Figure 1 (cartoon, rainbow, N blue to C red):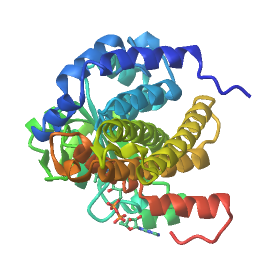
Figure 2: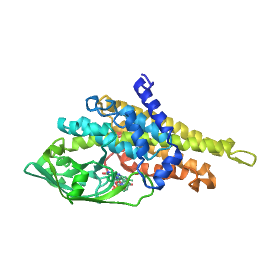
Figure 3: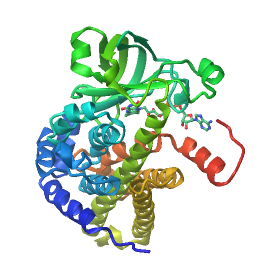
Figure 4: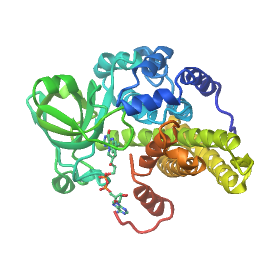
Length: 396
Ligand SMILES: Cc1cc2nc3c(=O)[nH]c(=O)nc-3n(C[C@H](O)[C@H](O)[C@H](O)COP(=O)(O)OP(=O)(O)OC[C@H]3O[C@@H](n4cnc5c(N)ncnc54)[C@H](O)[C@@H]3O)c2cc1C
């Protein structure tokens, strides 16, 4: 058993850390407050090859795997850029990894070089007003019409559309009830399609409106209307009616990246809390000398180390092409929890100043909280662990 990170992952950490060091908390807080995409760091990361890290080399990328991508994201969020989790899930995750795994030669040739160059961005349209945790119940439909796929329906909370060139839209080409009867399973009948966002908006078949939200405002998250969006059948990812397998390969990387972002977020919160606790003096001594302040931070440092180990294990298994559902879920659960607990403890450590936008704690606090609810809610992960790892009866 070897717990050392491979040399390549260490090089990723070093390279991303050098760029992250140029963008401090004030930069990320400004982007958040101005609801602005962090174009400057995105361009720097793309130039360094850290956006196209998982794009195969023949399409201009780094040919790296999930472990490297997880380390890159953890390094970014640990520097204070906690909203980078959204950025990495959307384009290097949904875009590069999905296409590398399931794209046709044409799709890869057309799209991946732009991802590697940092010029092409992605979104994923899965969640609907009546189908979040129960993704199997989505009703956005798709039908084949000649050599085109026609998509109709509604999505909600879809992130990054304002900059996205492509949205992977998850549709039902066969409704759930019919799929169970005619195709043998409710997970049959899914079709995933690559929708060119700007073209569909220009054609008047796609529209979206951002939802005002509590944090993560470096990207918008929108309500989306698809009104007979037409794409060529060559834009289907995988096969018509057999998209569920592709969807799983989208969701596992998403959870591993969410875990990596959470581990880094916990580190960021613990670092600002420790610095403040070492310098802030009350009753004639640094508050960090008091065990009521120090021990919770120390406890959370220990939990962060554990979440990191499980995140790396899940990423490593994914890279080996081995089953990683259990490890991925445990990593996502524990990383989201420790990220939130660390942000909450940091908040406590700062006293009244936690509430001031002079310090990054309030932003870290807002960014950390949503990790327990998305991309998959804590309860659904516990349900997975209960049924799959403990053999308990199913509730969902
Ligand atoms: C900021 C943000 C960005 C997002 N970005 C995207 C995106 O880019 N693309 C996309 O497709 N989606 C996106 N989402 C949607 C996100 O994936 C969903 O919100 C998430 O999957 C939860 O679904 P829901 O909100 O419908 O919650 P619901 O499914 O309505 O669940 C509500 C609560 O009930 C609990 N619950 C439900 N069933 C059970 C059960 N059987 N046992 C116990 N508890 C249960 C859940 O755990 C949860 O706590 C985003 C959401 C947010 C907030």
